[in-house]
Length: 248
Image (cartoon, rainbow, N blue to C red; front, top):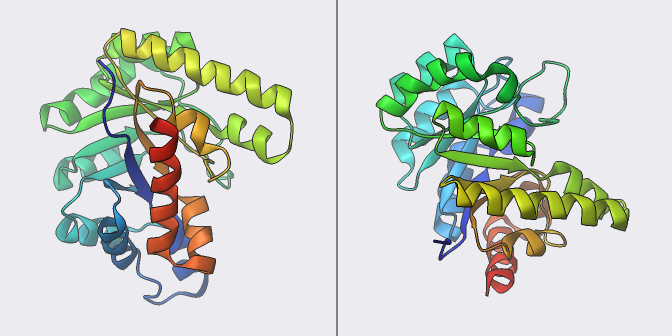
């Protein structure tokens, strides 16, 4: 069975990045999340990094209190983050790799190389009712590992595809899109729910949105950047239009 309406999750991390560049309370990522919800976002994504470089603990408190759409809580697989997730009980938890020196998430989580530990780690998160997803490369070994540890959802890292598109490397773009296409169909056939995220823009979202097995796209940096020029609501509406036209 394929997804009917393609869901859009809006990542509001970089509203917090702008706030933290100067300090103080503005702009408020919780306010951005409420506006995103009003503009048609199906969910909100926030990554609480270990170094708190953008989203901070108080933002998660505020999001849990204010949102009526699901919160997708992105986090590293650490004891601290597990405890925070268990306390807040968000709708969804997405495990991502995290390195202190990186500017953004650079690749997928190595589930295959840590399957025993990750199976034990996600068990209490699943028990509390969270939709647990694993942020991985479009790689069959990693998809198989997600199924093996009992993760019901995967999110495929689209960064290499988006970068190739932006840089005009069309052959590389086609190779990366083929990987996403094949792994989306493969994972769906295994019974996993498939999401895609990282780096998607108005220009490159269409071919990914058109994949019938994809249930959700998570997009943040580009939408927040576009919001500077056209406003957050219109930026989200335009992304939704691009997605819906591709899916139709």
